Length: 265
Length: 337
Image (cartoon, rainbow over all chains, first blue to last red; front, side, top):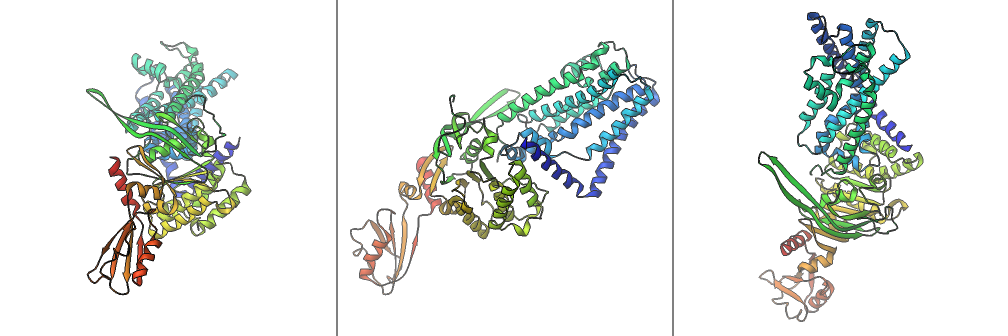
């Protein structure tokens, strides 16, 4: 398709402009890595005081955290800047997208792919590898497929969260904070073994905002753990759940764009 | 409307039928929802033919921008319909985007942090222009808009006039059939405005060997309209109150032309010389050297008036002022209120 060329040109140009100031780029990268390390230290500090969290040991909990963050960062790389929707609407950026012959969401995605976010993907990839190494798994083909499906599905769930939150901005005024609570709050919950949550909260974060599918449930399935509430094969559902959630969020987005009421001005 | 043709055999560039947009301004408070409906565009029915240059004028909040957003597929009409280049803008937004160019005076479609030429390159890719065609078109625009001096500068460091020339290049790169300009000269200095108008005039008349480009222009600046647009559409609170040429508008509100004559030798009274003509004459100074003659355009020509005057006195100097369009529009508003 001719469009693919357009996206390549846009992205290459965005990336080049990010590298135009190497010092500031390096600073951004370090900043991102420090944030990632703090999350690791947070979990480490917890396990310095307790031996297990909701029945999961250090390496198991680390896998939940690393897997969920890795999936989140991957989704975030592509659609994380949808948290800028209030600004896009206010400044009329969206209208600029609407007068170009490309889908609006694809333009939003390619407008701000941020290279510095890749550093966190690498970092959490490292933590995932560390956790897996400590757990001494037997690598069956099923385990590999499960892990990849979990990563892909988790990224899709993350993307769907951002798209849904971004869509809500068509109707909310100054709804940026509410959207962040939804996306970043959901991502925060996804880092922990779901057993630490009260049952009602946990049901919400599984059935409504399906973030326990990102890190926790695939870990349960991969490691053959027992969970009091869900069967152990639930971890296989991450990819289908991600695809479903993403499809719904895209439909909502389309509806939002078609019913856009103008950014004033 | 159902049964509309999606791609058009119509030869109209814009065709709107009772186009209406209402905004529901809901306030959800503790006492429930209270809705007030604002009708920003009200039953607008206009057609624009290829090659026309139309000035779309009205006060702030008259519905100009809302109309443009419906024409371009940004906003969905509440009721009624519009076809742009024969396409339903909401259903065929992307196809339409290839055929129209839009300049919003107050927002940029250029990439703020990139050099202008990078923006032009990206837009070439977005519109999938073949490299040779892109190169040729880019060179034309760089030359005619005089962009060469600041092509390498990031857009955020351009002056307003430079940026506006860049915006025009961006909107015209893909050689659209229809150019829509929303307040293109707002904030520009006199010289920049003038250059812009000259350029737009050439575009409208078919520059670079291309066909005439249809133009729709909203503005507050009556000079823009006077210089660029033979046809005016005036809107007031969403409704079309006038659609026609300048002369018709002037005739409608009864505005006059003003001829000021300085004579070589004083004459106390010119009324006798002008008897029978539909004019009003007044001596403007005590000596009788200066006289002011007012008359409606179309009823009598300035030449006929001058013939009569020069039959009785030698004319030293004269000035003729046309009715001020701004004043005319103000009168139109007052009469339609």
